[in-house]
Image (cartoon, rainbow, N blue to C red; front, side, top):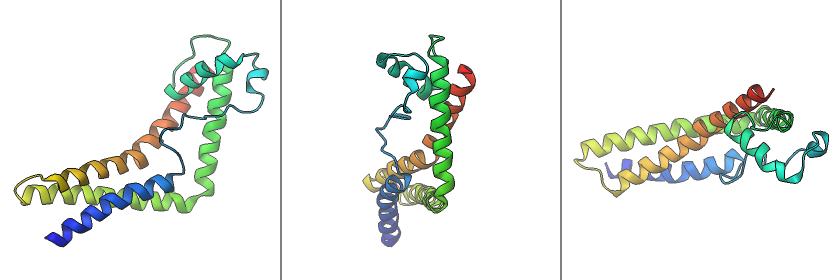
Length: 158
């Protein structure tokens, strides 16, 4: 029993760290943090409009000002293309991410089973649950939300 607890804790700690490095992105980074070269000039925008373009793009919403919408479409489209190209070029990274996702799900189920059969949810249980949920959030939910919002930004501002 103690061996399973040690294994699940090791998986729960190492899997999110590996996912962080495999994901190839900083969790604090904004979507498309750097505007494509010449974006503002092509659309006749000022530097202060960059934030409005980023907000509409990151949230997947229609920009309030019509003059900003073409820039949102271009920036979101180029970011979406870059994300898809990165996934295509790094197939091994995707396989590692899938394996880590499965590992996180197994660790989560194992932690819940051990918590229920051991008669209580101690600190180790909550550590495994939180770290496994963080892993699943980073590898499954966030990439899907990012792609969904970019597609929405393109379609709603086109």
